[in-house]
Image (cartoon, rainbow, N blue to C red; front, side, top):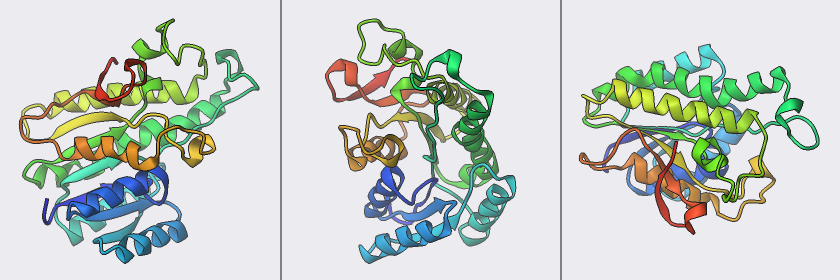
Length: 250
Protein backbone atom coordinates (compact mmCIF):
# COMPACT_ATOMS: atom_id res chain seq x y z
CA UNK A 1 0.00 0.00 0.00
CA UNK A 2 3.07 2.25 -0.08
CA UNK A 3 2.65 5.73 -1.57
CA UNK A 4 -1.09 5.46 -2.10
CA UNK A 5 -3.16 8.59 -1.58
CA UNK A 6 -6.48 8.31 0.27
CA UNK A 7 -9.11 10.94 1.00
CA UNK A 8 -11.72 10.36 3.71
CA UNK A 9 -14.53 12.88 4.05
CA UNK A 10 -15.87 13.63 7.51
CA UNK A 11 -12.62 12.25 8.91
CA UNK A 12 -12.26 14.40 12.00
CA UNK A 13 -14.12 11.99 14.31
CA UNK A 14 -15.96 8.70 14.64
CA UNK A 15 -15.83 6.15 11.85
CA UNK A 16 -14.17 8.65 9.51
CA UNK A 17 -11.23 9.23 11.85
CA UNK A 18 -10.92 5.49 12.52
CA UNK A 19 -10.93 4.87 8.76
CA UNK A 20 -8.21 7.47 8.22
CA UNK A 21 -6.14 5.87 10.99
CA UNK A 22 -6.48 2.36 9.58
CA UNK A 23 -5.62 3.47 6.05
CA UNK A 24 -2.64 5.33 7.46
CA UNK A 25 -1.36 2.20 9.18
CA UNK A 26 -1.33 0.62 5.71
CA UNK A 27 1.26 3.24 4.76
CA UNK A 28 -1.17 5.36 2.78
CA UNK A 29 -0.94 9.13 2.72
CA UNK A 30 -4.26 10.12 4.27
CA UNK A 31 -6.10 13.35 3.53
CA UNK A 32 -8.35 14.18 6.46
CA UNK A 33 -11.39 15.82 4.90
CA UNK A 34 -13.33 17.97 7.36
CA UNK A 35 -15.44 21.11 7.21
CA UNK A 36 -14.47 22.19 10.73
CA UNK A 37 -10.90 23.46 10.54
CA UNK A 38 -10.16 23.15 14.26
CA UNK A 39 -11.39 19.58 14.44
CA UNK A 40 -9.66 18.71 11.19
CA UNK A 41 -6.30 19.98 12.41
CA UNK A 42 -6.78 18.23 15.74
CA UNK A 43 -7.37 14.95 13.90
CA UNK A 44 -4.31 15.58 11.73
CA UNK A 45 -2.12 16.16 14.79
CA UNK A 46 -3.44 13.03 16.49
CA UNK A 47 -2.69 10.87 13.46
CA UNK A 48 0.74 12.38 12.96
CA UNK A 49 1.53 11.78 16.62
CA UNK A 50 0.98 8.09 15.86
CA UNK A 51 3.53 8.27 13.06
CA UNK A 52 1.01 8.36 10.22
CA UNK A 53 1.22 10.50 7.08
CA UNK A 54 -1.90 12.62 7.51
CA UNK A 55 -2.88 16.06 6.25
CA UNK A 56 -6.00 18.05 7.03
CA UNK A 57 -7.92 19.00 3.87
CA UNK A 58 -10.68 21.61 4.25
CA UNK A 59 -13.77 20.08 2.69
CA UNK A 60 -17.45 20.79 3.13
CA UNK A 61 -19.20 18.29 0.88
CA UNK A 62 -22.29 20.53 0.69
CA UNK A 63 -20.34 23.53 -0.63
CA UNK A 64 -19.47 23.51 -4.34
CA UNK A 65 -16.58 25.94 -3.95
CA UNK A 66 -15.11 23.89 -1.11
CA UNK A 67 -15.33 20.69 -3.17
CA UNK A 68 -13.68 22.34 -6.17
CA UNK A 69 -10.91 23.81 -4.04
CA UNK A 70 -10.22 20.44 -2.43
CA UNK A 71 -9.99 18.70 -5.80
CA UNK A 72 -7.63 21.37 -7.10
CA UNK A 73 -5.44 21.00 -4.01
CA UNK A 74 -5.21 17.21 -4.43
CA UNK A 75 -4.33 17.60 -8.10
CA UNK A 76 -1.64 20.17 -7.41
CA UNK A 77 -0.14 18.28 -4.44
CA UNK A 78 -0.45 14.66 -5.55
CA UNK A 79 -1.65 14.53 -9.16
CA UNK A 80 -3.88 11.53 -8.53
CA UNK A 81 -6.07 9.84 -5.92
CA UNK A 82 -6.05 6.11 -5.13
CA UNK A 83 -8.85 5.88 -2.57
CA UNK A 84 -11.93 8.00 -1.95
CA UNK A 85 -14.07 7.21 1.08
CA UNK A 86 -17.29 9.24 1.04
CA UNK A 87 -17.86 8.99 4.77
CA UNK A 88 -19.39 12.35 5.74
CA UNK A 89 -23.01 11.98 6.81
CA UNK A 90 -25.69 13.39 9.07
CA UNK A 91 -28.80 12.07 10.82
CA UNK A 92 -31.89 14.22 11.28
CA UNK A 93 -35.53 13.40 11.94
CA UNK A 94 -38.85 15.06 12.68
CA UNK A 95 -41.50 14.38 15.29
CA UNK A 96 -41.45 12.34 18.47
CA UNK A 97 -41.91 9.04 16.61
CA UNK A 98 -40.07 9.91 13.37
CA UNK A 99 -43.00 8.78 11.25
CA UNK A 100 -43.07 9.39 7.50
CA UNK A 101 -46.09 11.66 8.00
CA UNK A 102 -44.04 13.80 10.40
CA UNK A 103 -41.22 14.38 7.93
CA UNK A 104 -40.57 17.92 6.76
CA UNK A 105 -39.05 18.78 3.40
CA UNK A 106 -36.55 21.06 5.12
CA UNK A 107 -35.11 18.14 7.05
CA UNK A 108 -35.15 15.91 3.99
CA UNK A 109 -33.23 18.49 1.97
CA UNK A 110 -30.59 18.95 4.68
CA UNK A 111 -29.96 15.23 4.96
CA UNK A 112 -29.80 14.70 1.21
CA UNK A 113 -27.39 17.63 0.77
CA UNK A 114 -24.79 15.81 2.85
CA UNK A 115 -25.63 12.13 2.40
CA UNK A 116 -26.47 12.02 -1.32
CA UNK A 117 -25.56 15.20 -3.16
CA UNK A 118 -22.27 15.47 -1.27
CA UNK A 119 -20.85 12.11 -2.40
CA UNK A 120 -21.91 12.82 -5.99
CA UNK A 121 -20.26 16.25 -5.97
CA UNK A 122 -17.06 14.97 -4.38
CA UNK A 123 -16.82 11.91 -6.61
CA UNK A 124 -17.36 13.92 -9.78
CA UNK A 125 -14.77 16.50 -8.78
CA UNK A 126 -12.17 13.84 -7.98
CA UNK A 127 -12.96 11.29 -10.67
CA UNK A 128 -10.31 12.58 -13.09
CA UNK A 129 -7.71 12.06 -10.36
CA UNK A 130 -9.07 8.61 -9.50
CA UNK A 131 -8.80 7.63 -13.15
CA UNK A 132 -5.09 8.54 -13.07
CA UNK A 133 -4.43 6.00 -10.33
CA UNK A 134 -3.48 2.44 -11.32
CA UNK A 135 -6.60 0.96 -9.69
CA UNK A 136 -8.60 3.37 -7.57
CA UNK A 137 -11.30 2.45 -5.06
CA UNK A 138 -14.42 4.45 -4.21
CA UNK A 139 -16.24 3.60 -0.98
CA UNK A 140 -19.59 5.19 -0.14
CA UNK A 141 -20.39 4.76 3.53
CA UNK A 142 -24.01 3.67 3.58
CA UNK A 143 -26.09 1.70 6.09
CA UNK A 144 -28.28 -1.35 6.42
CA UNK A 145 -31.19 1.03 6.96
CA UNK A 146 -30.77 1.99 3.30
CA UNK A 147 -31.52 -1.58 2.25
CA UNK A 148 -35.15 -1.89 1.20
CA UNK A 149 -34.88 -5.63 1.63
CA UNK A 150 -33.68 -5.33 5.22
CA UNK A 151 -36.10 -2.58 6.21
CA UNK A 152 -39.19 -4.34 4.86
CA UNK A 153 -38.49 -7.76 6.36
CA UNK A 154 -41.12 -8.26 9.12
CA UNK A 155 -38.78 -10.70 10.84
CA UNK A 156 -35.82 -8.34 10.75
CA UNK A 157 -34.41 -6.32 13.63
CA UNK A 158 -34.98 -3.02 11.82
CA UNK A 159 -38.59 -3.50 10.73
CA UNK A 160 -39.93 -1.15 13.42
CA UNK A 161 -37.93 1.83 12.13
CA UNK A 162 -40.01 4.28 10.09
CA UNK A 163 -37.91 7.44 9.74
CA UNK A 164 -37.68 8.75 6.18
CA UNK A 165 -34.71 11.17 5.88
CA UNK A 166 -31.68 9.07 6.85
CA UNK A 167 -32.82 5.64 5.57
CA UNK A 168 -34.05 7.03 2.25
CA UNK A 169 -30.83 9.01 1.80
CA UNK A 170 -28.81 5.83 2.24
CA UNK A 171 -31.09 3.97 -0.16
CA UNK A 172 -30.41 6.76 -2.68
CA UNK A 173 -26.67 6.49 -1.99
CA UNK A 174 -26.87 2.76 -2.68
CA UNK A 175 -28.33 3.49 -6.11
CA UNK A 176 -25.68 6.15 -6.70
CA UNK A 177 -23.07 3.50 -5.90
CA UNK A 178 -24.57 1.00 -8.32
CA UNK A 179 -24.71 3.55 -11.14
CA UNK A 180 -21.08 4.65 -10.72
CA UNK A 181 -20.05 1.00 -10.67
CA UNK A 182 -21.86 0.52 -13.99
CA UNK A 183 -20.24 3.58 -15.56
CA UNK A 184 -16.77 2.53 -14.42
CA UNK A 185 -17.11 -1.21 -15.01
CA UNK A 186 -14.56 -1.16 -17.86
CA UNK A 187 -11.96 0.64 -15.76
CA UNK A 188 -9.79 -0.64 -12.88
CA UNK A 189 -11.88 1.44 -10.44
CA UNK A 190 -14.16 -0.42 -8.04
CA UNK A 191 -17.13 1.31 -6.42
CA UNK A 192 -18.93 -0.18 -3.43
CA UNK A 193 -21.19 0.85 -0.56
CA UNK A 194 -20.13 0.04 3.00
CA UNK A 195 -22.36 -0.93 5.90
CA UNK A 196 -20.36 -0.30 9.08
CA UNK A 197 -23.19 -1.48 11.30
CA UNK A 198 -24.63 0.29 14.34
CA UNK A 199 -21.50 1.94 15.70
CA UNK A 200 -21.20 4.19 18.75
CA UNK A 201 -20.71 7.67 17.26
CA UNK A 202 -22.02 11.20 17.69
CA UNK A 203 -24.68 10.41 15.07
CA UNK A 204 -26.54 8.20 17.51
CA UNK A 205 -25.46 9.62 20.86
CA UNK A 206 -22.81 6.89 21.10
CA UNK A 207 -25.51 4.26 21.58
CA UNK A 208 -24.24 1.80 18.96
CA UNK A 209 -23.04 -1.67 19.94
CA UNK A 210 -20.08 -1.64 17.54
CA UNK A 211 -17.02 0.56 17.84
CA UNK A 212 -15.95 3.15 15.24
CA UNK A 213 -12.88 0.99 14.66
CA UNK A 214 -15.05 -2.00 13.82
CA UNK A 215 -17.14 0.15 11.50
CA UNK A 216 -14.03 1.45 9.77
CA UNK A 217 -12.88 -2.09 9.01
CA UNK A 218 -15.66 -2.33 6.42
CA UNK A 219 -14.57 0.77 4.50
CA UNK A 220 -10.91 -0.23 4.69
CA UNK A 221 -11.70 -3.68 3.32
CA UNK A 222 -13.52 -2.17 0.33
CA UNK A 223 -10.79 0.45 -0.12
CA UNK A 224 -8.15 -2.24 -0.47
CA UNK A 225 -9.94 -4.77 -2.67
CA UNK A 226 -7.70 -6.73 -5.05
CA UNK A 227 -8.07 -6.56 -8.81
CA UNK A 228 -10.47 -9.54 -8.81
CA UNK A 229 -12.65 -7.99 -6.08
CA UNK A 230 -16.31 -7.06 -6.57
CA UNK A 231 -17.82 -3.75 -7.59
CA UNK A 232 -21.34 -2.40 -7.21
CA UNK A 233 -22.26 -4.07 -3.92
CA UNK A 234 -23.57 -3.11 -0.49
CA UNK A 235 -21.16 -4.98 1.77
CA UNK A 236 -20.50 -5.04 5.48
CA UNK A 237 -21.91 -6.01 8.87
CA UNK A 238 -24.88 -8.37 8.72
CA UNK A 239 -26.95 -7.90 11.87
CA UNK A 240 -29.86 -10.08 10.78
CA UNK A 241 -27.45 -12.84 9.78
CA UNK A 242 -26.05 -13.09 13.29
CA UNK A 243 -23.10 -10.81 12.71
CA UNK A 244 -20.10 -11.23 10.48
CA UNK A 245 -19.52 -9.59 7.13
CA UNK A 246 -21.02 -10.13 3.71
CA UNK A 247 -23.21 -8.79 0.93
CA UNK A 248 -26.47 -7.13 1.97
CA UNK A 249 -29.58 -6.84 -0.22
CA UNK A 250 -30.23 -3.52 -1.90
